Amino acid sequence: MDIHGKIDEQFAPIKEVFAQNFTDYADVGASFAVSLEGEIVCDIWGGHLDEERTRPWQEDTIVNVFSSTKTMSFLCALILADRGMLDFYEPVTTYWPQFGQNGKENVEVRHLMSHSAGLSGMDKDFSGVALYDWDAVCVALAEQAPWWEPGTASGYHAFTQGHLIGEVVRRISGKSIGTFFADEIAGPLGADFHIGTKETHWPRIGNLIPPVANPADQAMDADPDSIAARTFRNPKPQAEDSWTAGWRLAEIPAANGHGNARSIVRAQTPLANGGSAFGVDLLSAAGVARIFDEQSHGEDLVLGVPIRFGMGYGLSSPDLPMGPNENIAWWGGWGGSTVVVDTDAHMCVSYVMNKMGEGTLGDPRGFNLQAAAYECLLR
Image (cartoon, rainbow, N blue to C red):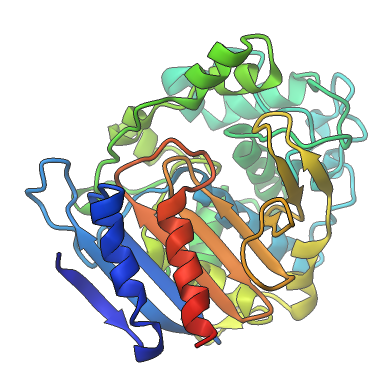
């Protein structure tokens, strides 16, 4: 197959692994990028935008990356904390007074960042287009009682985390999180990533190809009364929603960001390099270090696997090792996209595709490419 883009000689073996994804895992279209010491050393793409393979994936192709979007909301909060405008250990009510209802008076911002606020799903029905009404979602979250005691365990806030963090960002900055991200991160860093994607960008969006199984259906089959089933049942993730105008225009900072591997790496690379990259001082070194303030480590009530959460990001652990180094932050999106930030190696890696697998936190395609990047790094 034809692989386009640029790649430094040290990382050339990655191209073979990238091509293997198309033969071993039937990839349709994808992009992969790596930065090292603040410079892009791999930026490749290939395949097609459509399942019929009639339209080639282009340099500027973007797709919906689902929960890899969450890492952008983390960046927004980290910037505000670095500027002294947000304290993760303050109650959410310090910034959002209406939030302190139904037993949430002592919920702290760090609980929103680490999926431990007990608000992993919604009591009120937000299926379909209802999710696109920002104010309605935030009012419902403010009124809702937690499903478990906040701070005692993580339970993946699949859709709700973005609104929870985003409303805190809005209350502090006066900007929606999509606008804040565009102004403070994407614009300065030249990252072609969007939370709320304007119609001018739609012609270059590759529609996602839905997976065989839906996590909501899988959770319901296992135990319809479980926290996992309740989380994925409302709002229920539907890959086909990403094809619609309403979804693209809305700001759903836990799930509807549009970008490619290059844009994710450009946005996240400052974290791998003490807070600065591409001529932009995004955060201080101390601001970056906040990521590794461990908030929880145990079996996630929704995902059912042991996960170690820092301030927003998942952290590498013996249960889910993300690489050979200690200080690695990561996350992934439903269908297969991945984001990995290694602050020890000063390396950032991302994989983005249009054919969705069944995993909620990435899958072998991205992780194999990540492993190849580390092999190249150690050559």
